[in-house]
Image (cartoon, rainbow, N blue to C red):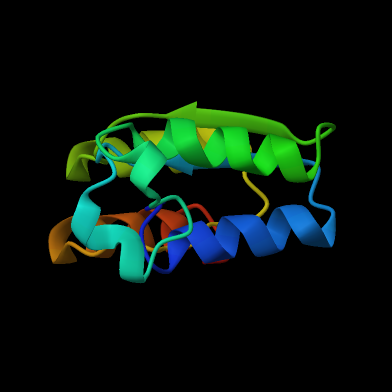
Length: 115
């Protein structure tokens, strides 16, 4: 969750390592100020959704990977439902907002999904 400076690298490393399926969630678009730290941030991607840019990049690395992209900010009250119904083996928390981060961690721990 989160396709910024940490999440974009984490997603790419997972795909390069051979993960078969990946869910990416972020409601933000690429801002010119992101270019110094985010893989998705290029002049050509300004103002595009981060998840759309990253999905295209990840599929370019491994066309066989299944990418589930959600262009939305994770709401605190959605976290438990997302984790319980997502079928995740683990969760990678790359959220930069405190409240959603805490709710995601709580939901993962409650659902026994490693975070």
